[in-house]
Amino acid sequence: MEMYLRADHIETLWVKMAMIYGHKWVSGYGESDDGTWLRGLQDLTPGALAKGLEACLHRLDIWPPTLPEFRLLCLGLPDITTTIGNVMNNFSDPVANLIRAQIGSWDLQRMSFKQIELRVKQIYPTVLLEVTQNMVKQTRNENELLTKNKSKLEAH
Picture: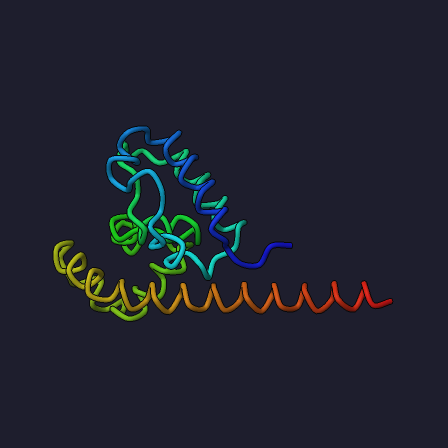
């Protein structure tokens, strides 16, 4: 089982993104990665990368995602626009739930949409960082456990 991304994973990503987004991908990000995308995604797994690619196939946006946007897609997390809407009416979104808890139900009931939007934009980066760090840490722990168990099985 592959634990971390390698340069060949990013090369494959480049080919697939060019297939999805055509000239917009290549003109925006070049013929190949200069190492930025590998560094920005290196703590993710190949499975997470595949999840991000699958999400790109279903996006309505005709422009390719930026590195931070693609990272969110890989982790299955909502972007800021989606989160603003989810704070208002989607109680199954964990990011929106954390933001809603920080704002407080009393304030949410009394604030205008514009006030809520501004507050979400202030809170979103911090909550997102916390959530992504926890997700990456959990994935690393799971991968380390799988590696240990595989080593034990091979030793017997």
